[in-house]
Amino acid sequence: MIHFLWLPAYRPPTLNQLMRGTLKARIRLAKECKQFVGAYARMQGTPPATGRRRVSLTIVLKGRQQEADVDAYFKSLLDALVHHGLLLSDRVEHCRLGDVTHTRLGVPGTRVYLEDLP
Image (cartoon, rainbow, N blue to C red; front, side, top):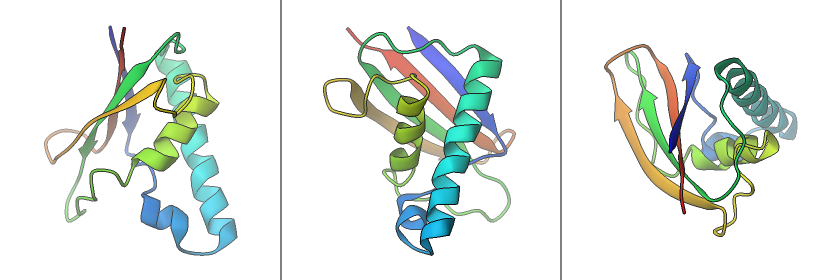
């Protein structure tokens, strides 16, 4: 089964954003990501993980926003998903990385697809 999580007008911080800048700014970005994921997961009724899941993303860009590398969004997003129980862990036994696509069609934000795997 595939569960869908919509984060309107939000993109998770990239790995570069988490590795550069002041420690205070990096902590703020990670905390903000956890708050967004937790709030929207509760509002949308996304069920907690019971086994392994594949995580895929669609990033909807607007205007002159640039695409990031395909692996750039996963660090903060996986940590937030684990924190809220939407993934059991981000280790290989419980998580598979899916596709990352970018589009400019639709409302800007992030679509997270959580696919339950056998």
